[in-house]
Image 1 (tube, rainbow, N blue to C red):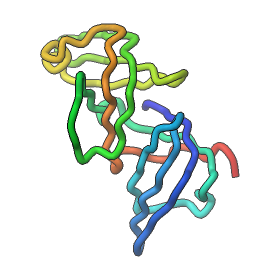
Image 2 (tube, rainbow, N blue to C red; image 1 turned 90 degrees about the vertical axis):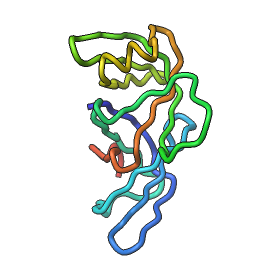
Image 3 (cartoon, rainbow, N blue to C red; image 1 turned 120 degrees about the horizontal axis):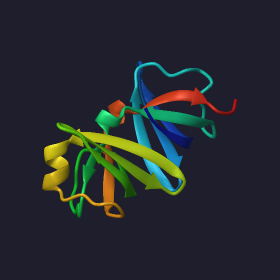
Image 4 (cartoon, one colour; image 1 turned 90 degrees about the horizontal axis):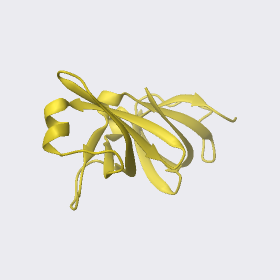
Length: 133
């Protein structure tokens, strides 16, 4: 799991659906949730989690997507297997991992030190731990 330390900045809900907005190093992230713990409030610091297979990458991206979560990152390591590639990404002091097909990594001509845009759907982000109450 890739982990992101963030702070809750806004919570919107209707019935049991919640859209939670976070601040991650000055970047806004959003999470969609059907269950939201009562101790999740504005100002709460949390550890977010996302599976590496749910992190998409874009190189030289310019446009509009339905992905709410778009984070600039630099590639620090690439491990190409037979079918998949593990891409380690650095965002300030946080390390994220994306697992994509080897073919995609080669087609994108990914290299260490490349800047990419990390794309995470709001439905793929979850709160793993509350860091303060």
